[in-house]
Image (tube, rainbow, N blue to C red; front, side, top):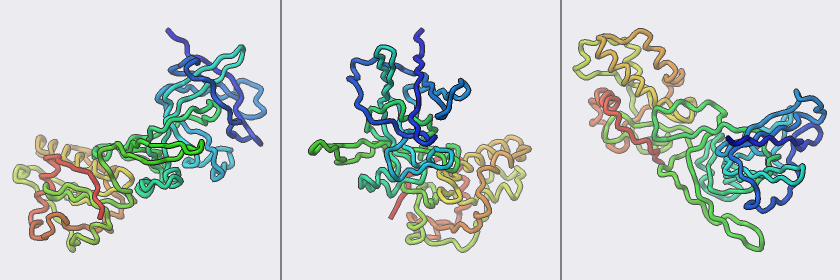
Length: 351
């Protein structure tokens, strides 16, 4: 069994606050020992003289980490840390340990996440579609001194095709795209030449998106601006009708009203949106068909998915693809059909 190396050193500090260590060149990596994990023990503050004042950080290959940035725009808050989006972020691809006599140095091969501001700095137009706490995973890699690492980072992967994905909490880092970066060196200066998006599904920034889910021929996401410009607004609130197989089942009116809930992403509905409610309702329909009544406590299975009071203010539209309102005369029935067939295409569409 291999033993995880434990490295004891001092973190770089100025005026009691963590700072970047002095920049230095790394040795030839092929001569260094590779590790899958290691423990870094460092002082918690400048006056540390007891073990209680030491921090322990175990880093493993594959971990996401926050890295102190070399950026004048990053201003520390009172406790010496930085605001969430001021840090740089990366994924640990390799760990290299260099031992010279009694001194041990650690270097990390970091695969970079790009923030919106990083993309803007490089003139990448993808920045316009990146959310406030969204990161973009790139294939750009650098060798970084271990002392630049602040801590682990929690970065949630967001799958736009998965309507059942749990909501991503506010101010939580997430990523949905992977990009390939092409660089060229000119007069010893590395410059970005191009960016290729490797993800198959290209979305739009989730200011407000609405799913047109009433007809099986649609099942697409549309930006609010697109709907307002090309779709016909509904002037009445829909009433729910179920297929005849449910005629003998007793349903609460509040349950039926949930079927006309707008399916939205962005704004009050969060990054993931409230699409999961469709599958919660489908499950309850199946249970009700077996029991002849909704199961006890059914509200506990959907109340977290129901939008807040802003629901009534959300505009509803006829589908801009089928265009004619006459095709919606049975839209209540088609809504149920959508839930039962679970045929979903989540690719957002813009104008």
